[in-house]
Length: 184
Image 1 (spheres, rainbow, N blue to C red):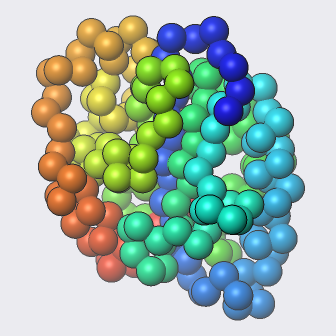
Image 2 (tube, rainbow, N blue to C red):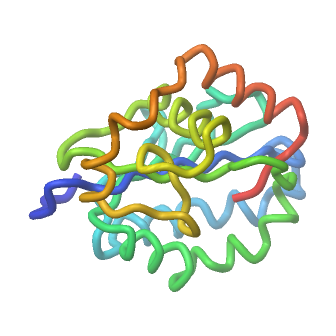
C-alpha cells in the first residue's frame, strides 16, 4: 500500500461474468494482459491497493459473487487517479476488448465509495456497496463515475442512506451472476 496525504480514498469494485473459463484458449488474450495491467496499476499515480488472492498475483481465482464471476477490488487516492488509470492507460485496451471475454451486465457492475485513508475494504463490504447501488441507485454511499460524490459530500450524507444487509448483497451478486449479465 502506498502512503497518502488524503483523509479519504476511493474504493472501487468491478465484477465481470466470464464468457468462458479462464483456462479456455479464447480467454488467453485477457489472461496474458493480467500481469502487465496489474503492474501498471501498481505503479500508477494515486494507486493505493488491490485485492489479490493469497499466493497469487491477482484476484481472478476468488469467486465471491459466483463461480463464473471475477472481481476487481482496488483503492485509489482520488477519483481522478482511478479515472486516469482506467481510461488513459494500457488498461483501456482491456476495456475495448471486454465483450470478447465478459458477458454484458444488465445492472450495475461497478461501484465506487469513499473509505478512510488506510482502510482496506473487504470483498463482503464491496459486494454490499454494489448491492446498495443496485437497490437504491447512486448515493454518497455507493456511486459510479457518472453519478459521483466527493469525499466531503459522502462524509456529510453517509447516514442518510441505510446500508444494505450483507445477505442481500450476496444474494444480489449471485442473482446478477445467474442472470448472465456482466462487463468490466
